[in-house]
Amino acid sequence: MIDEPGIFHKLYKKLLTLYPRAFKEQLGESMEQTFNDLCRERYEAGGGLIGFVLLTFVDTLAGIIKENIKKENVIMVPILRNFGVVIISVIAAIAILVSTYLTKNLDSMWIILLIWSITWPLWEWWIKDKR
Amino acid sequence: MTTKNNIQLLTPAVFHILLALSSGERHGYGIMKQVEIDSQGKVSMGPGTLYGSLKRMLDAGLVIESDKRVDSEMDDERRIYYQITGIGAQALEAELDRYKRIVTIAQQRKLYPKTFAYDR
Image 1 (cartoon, rainbow over the protein chains, first blue to last red):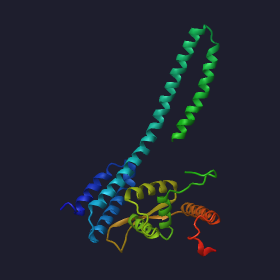
Image 2 (image 1 turned 120 degrees about the horizontal axis):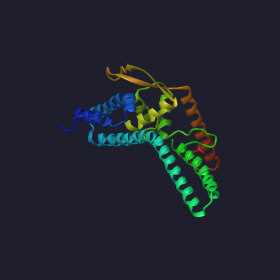
Image 3 (image 1 turned 180 degrees about the vertical axis):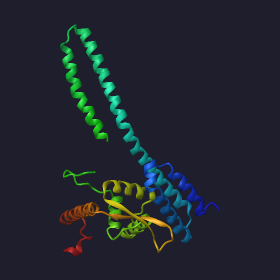
């Protein structure tokens, strides 16, 4: 019978493996127990389990996505930071070379450096804000 | 979400969990049941919402885990209990104060004349 709690317990346990490892290690067992408690309560009350299980799975899936996004952000910030350094430096270098070639003097280099000195702290602030 | 005075506003889930734990330590299922009782069945949260909030609360020091033990009213399985901390109690008190101020403003502006008729 599909409405047996045992099947849902197994499925829920599988679903919990999608949480980030640290989260799973800290709270996975408690989540499983709570799900089993809720299932038992429903089952003993004679209520159908499918609707309840679907809602719980959706709620848990939303939690899994949220926790994984949070984890990804921690990983992405240093990558974004390094990526930003490279991009800003390359743009600044190209701008200095092009302006020096076009104007045949180095005066514009100071303007480029000024722009760079403003852009850099703004980038740092933006990245910091994303943490 | 923070206010201008940097006071942390609690999400509804965090607020209800703190309220449930204010009367004693509970395991996950116990928290869910207490939230349902406190809200007269109007708030119910799934395990994903409950444990996602508990994780953030543990990280923020609003709650702590206590040792695993058996709930004699349920079965012989050992469960982790959660307990409100001093910081958690302060956060709950601050949130309740905020609600109280909002209710006072609502009363002054007569937004709910029927609801607050008994206060006059």
